[in-house]
Image 1 (cartoon, rainbow, N blue to C red):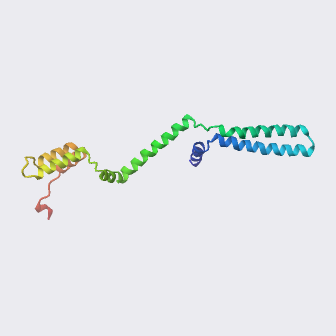
Image 2: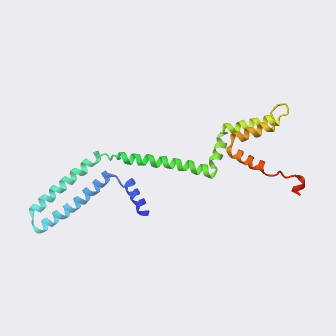
Length: 167
């Protein structure tokens, strides 16, 4: 697993071709310089001439390199977008699961429409001048939440506690 993670990091972050070209050109220059020094030491003019040509070509690569633009492959761009999308989804899930999402909704003042309707109906139930009663509120609550409906049915099956059974 660590190998796969290291490979993904290498592919994602180690793909600057311009930097690799510059590094390899510098290495070739150092090898050509060593070859030139060796050719001078043994008196081989052909080795010296060929190494001078290599050094000249490397210098041309270094002078051209600033005009080269590193282009991100299309598949890498897609992976980057997918990673950002996955990160955004993960943040949303973490916020929701930890309860911070609810706190954010409270700070923004967002109240879901079903909850707002229930609160309005409950206010009307509590007002003696209104015709709504508790039965209407319970019916609305049962209709708005399948989980509450299940809990209501279970509660109806149980024997209600009376004063005699409670003591």
